[in-house]
Amino acid sequence: KSKQKKNKTKEDPNLPAYENPPSWIPPQERRDNPQYNNNLITFLPRTVSIKRTGNQPLGFNIRGGKKDEYGVYVSKVLKGSDADKLGLKSGDKILKVNNTSFEDIGHDEAVSLLQKSDDLQLEVRYFPYGFNLQQERIGLV
Image (cartoon, rainbow, N blue to C red; front, side):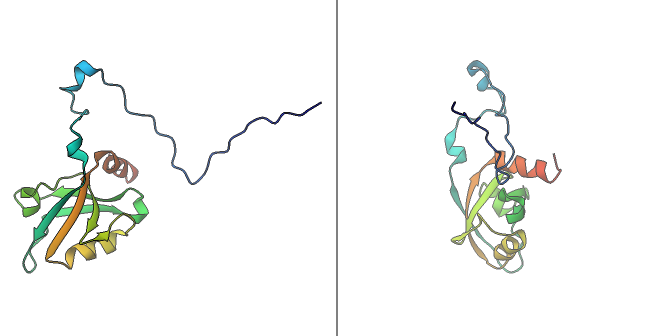
């Protein structure tokens, strides 16, 4: 007799827990639903150039970093600031600053890099999904 092994799969402890996909939105309801956006240009990376003088504030706050696993995000933009006028928004993931990757950087290091330069070239991508996951993880939602 041949023994058949049962196919048992072990969950990898390094992988995040499974998340159910968002609920289905019927096509006829998508145009007016705030949770649906089919304008893909909104989600493409873009460059925002901010120049400041002296101790002028950046005009935005950040949240996240390496320990939060979801990256560094713009969490708040001050209304009327240069950052606001240039289109930076809450939910923008910071990918690079002056060609320094922000993909695997700690929060304190990110703040330091942002504060030490008067001429910032930020590569950002609007990614509300990751931003919301981060807020849930730290208990803001």
